[in-house]
Image (cartoon, rainbow, N blue to C red; front, side, top):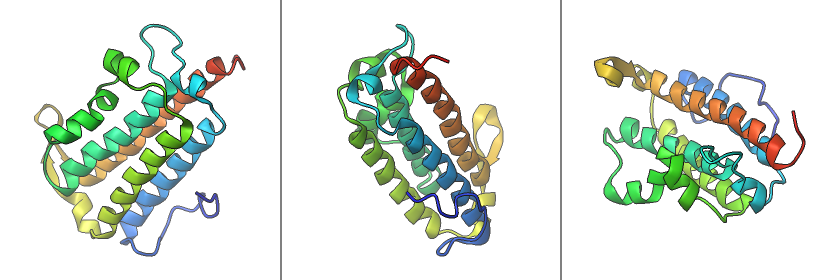
Length: 177
């Protein structure tokens, strides 16, 4: 992903105006996430700071899994099916299962998964108009949320985990604070 234009939140060919602005923010977040893991080896991607922590690899797969879940929810109006839960469940839930199952992958594996998921997301967003962002459905604790909030939350989740990745990277590479 090129850094050209990343600091401009605005129109992007193929997207309606408001969706383009959301995509602009998603592109910047993804660029910085990918930049923050550049050069990491398998040992660093699997590094656990303590018995309760998540690895950088698990956090990267979690970012993709959250996007998969919100894609199903907002584009298809459904939850993940059994096959999708087998594929993404550990990454969605993190914790013990992720520490057990998400290991032994190189950086390219995680980056490919992120790219594949994002390509699907962008294709779906390109099929929608701005009014889709305003569609509301019941969400957390009986409150309604619109699709704009849901995709903001995907972005927010990635940024939160990017902070964890930065913290873990320093420890996994021995660079300290």
